[in-house]
Image 1 (tube, one colour):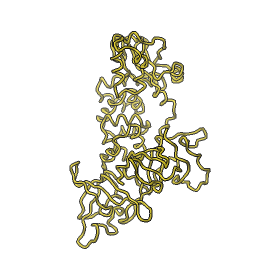
Image 2: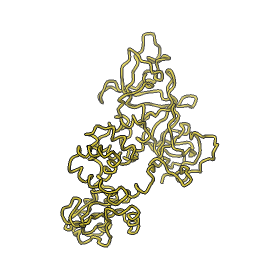
Image 3: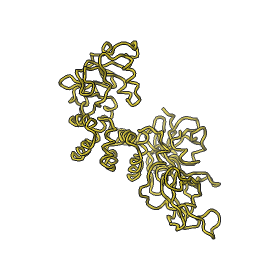
Image 4: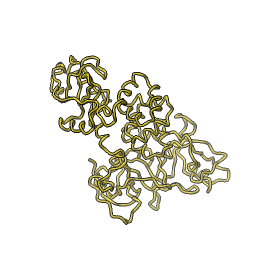
Length: 462
């Protein structure tokens, strides 16, 4: 099985219920020319990676990895020093393809001391790039990584060859400037939140390489899903001009949140590198305290004139880049129509728009009974406001009655949840919470303290 084909595949229990998706293949490198032994799979379950022993895998059927047992450990997977992630760490590496010597037998370069695990250089070797790796079971029931697909020459047009593990060397040597094109190709269909979860589990060096390989729009989407400390780390690793471009591609509220984590001098330098029309809304948001409506709001809601039709409103909310919360309502104002707008008139709910003839003017179907928020409204009051009126978003007006932004429920949740909510699911007693349907964790002293064995039953996907 080629590891790139496993990336992102569904993982099913014996009953056909979804457990998660394949995140990576975990192997341990061995000395000499011995191929790495496959330990198992890192599987993403509800944005948490867990370890699934390779002995639980019965095969790949209909585009899904099928397990022989639903009993798994639900501890968060933590990579050990002797473990290597195939997709995250081996793809895109520059290694040496050995040339067979005149007195060698079998596959070239396979003698002890010259294999991939030894890191020994070969004067007759040729530098190649790893694009994939294949794993297969042995007669003893173990799995090994015994073949490597490499590209000879630089660029996409180089010849791709599949060679034995003992025909390449250099995997154990430090790698500088590894790149990430093949890693990203393996996960190109991941949603930003899932790609962010993948990045979170990589080393700092590898995260920087992936960030460098992503385009500005994709990197902006991923940054919005990462913890703040990792956002700062990745942004700080970019050239200043590119960091400014990425900030421009982010939503103004997310860009303001990120800049708020930087030293004032650094934030101002990046703002000056941004296009003035992109920096202006970010500067306005930075004025407000973080835990107020002004600090949480986005300045790019769907804004319409009162003489716009329902058909126009529905066309606007169908725009794919809009989040569900922002697409739930349109806001009707007097000109100008960019925030801060002219006088705010009211909002029209998406459901109301669906019930009206397309030619109806939105000015005639607006809701004027919902009291708007003020920029200095504190977080607890914003929360009560959304809950009281069953809203997923609420308008924010300044003293002049102009619409300056909209607070959405996802922004409120980001501020209500613990700062590390993306990394763990704590319970009141501090223990990690099991996914729905999983059995309770065993008591202290269980036979599997490292989290590599059976603990709970795999839950069905929700």
